[in-house]
Length: 494
Image 1 (cartoon, rainbow, N blue to C red):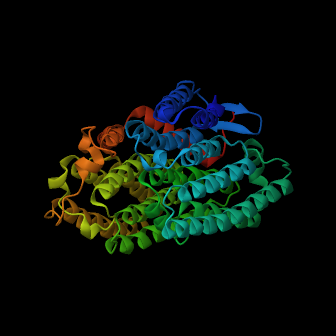
Image 2 (image 1 turned 60 degrees about the vertical axis):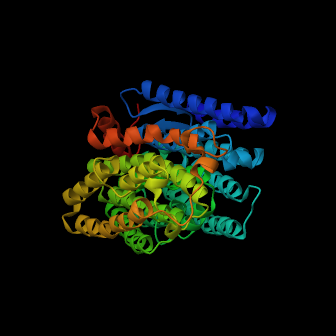
C-alpha cells in the first residue's frame, strides 16, 4: 500500500502526457482523491504497534512516516484542488513539462517518507532537489531572477546533500564497527547503542548541515526567499513541503540514532541553537521586508526553527509538539501562498507598498489573507498558536525558563512584522488604481479569466486550522505521542 503514494503521481504523470490537455484538471482531481484515500487507508489499518507496514529493507512505514505523509498530503491537496478549480493556473498554462516535473516531485516527496533505509532516503531527498529545481525554471517566461533563484537553490542544496551523503556514510561506518552491515532502520537501531560516540556526533553534524540546508535552517536558508518569491504561487506552495516534510523528516529519523547512541545532549544543544538562530534571523528580515512572497518565505525559516527547537527540547512532549507544529504549518503555508498568488496577480506586483485597500477591493481575498497571516503569526484560536505554546511548555519542562523565554521574545518582532505589513495592505486606503480581481481573478464568480474560483481549495485548511486550534483530538494526540516514541526509540518492532 505505501508504494501507491509514489505510484499515483507517476500514473498521473503518464496520463498527463497521453491524454488531451483538457483532461488535466480532472487528472489532478483524481490524483487528489486517490492520495487522500490511500492515506486514510494507511491510518485505518494502523495496528497497535508503531510499525504497520514493512517490505524488506527498502520500504517501511511507521507512525513517524504517517505524520510526515499527512503533512505532505496537507500541502498537496489544496494545490491539486486549486489546479482543478483553476485551469488557467500558471503551471498548467506553461504546458505538460511543468506539470510533469511537479508530479515527479510529488512522487519523490512521498518516496522520502516510505524509504526503508538511510541510503534510499538520501536518494529520494536528492530527487526532490532535481525535480523542484527543474520545475522552478519551467515556464514561458524564464526571467533572469528566476534562473538565478534556481541556480542558488541547486548550488546550496547540492552542497548540502553532499554533506548529508558524507554523514550517511559515517553512520554506516559507525554501524559497521558496531557489528551491523546494513542501512535499513531496524539494523541501524539495533546497532546504535554500540556505535562510537565520536563517530555518531560527527555523522550527525554532517547530516544536520546537509539536510539542514535543504530544510532552510539558518544560516543555510539563503536559497529559500529567492526561490519562493520567483516561483509561481502553486509551485511555492508545493515547495513549502520540502523543508518540513522531506528534509525535516530526515533530521527526525537520524536524531533517533543519535539518541540511542547516547548522544542526545549533544544533538539537542545543536538543534536548540539552530532553532533559535533561525527565529532570530527571520525576525529583522520580516520587519524590513518589501516583497510579500519573501515575507512568507522568511516565515518558513522561523517555523522550521521552531520545529528544530521542539525537537531539541526532546522528550515525548517536545517531539510531539514539534510534529504538531510541522503539520499545522503544512496546513497554513501552502494556502497562504495560493491566496497571496491571487492577490499579486490582481495587483500586478509583489511589492507590499503597492498592495493597499485589500479588504475594500476584494473582501474575500482580504479576509482569507488575514486568516492565514494570523495563523502564521501564531495567534489564537488558530492551530499554530497551540503548537507553539506546546513547544514552549516542552522547553520549560526540559530546559527551564531561559530558552523558551528567549524564543518567545524573538517571536514578538515577527508578530509585529506581520501586523505592520498586513494592516497596511488590508486596512489601508485603496491604491491609486483598481486591482483587476474580477477581470483577472474571477472574484470567485467563475466569470474571470484568472484564478479566483481556485481559492475555494483553501476552505479545508481553514477549517482544520480552526478545529485544531480550538480542540485537541485524543486520537491525534495519541498518534503524535507514539510518533514521538518512534523518534526517541528509533523503531518499535511489531
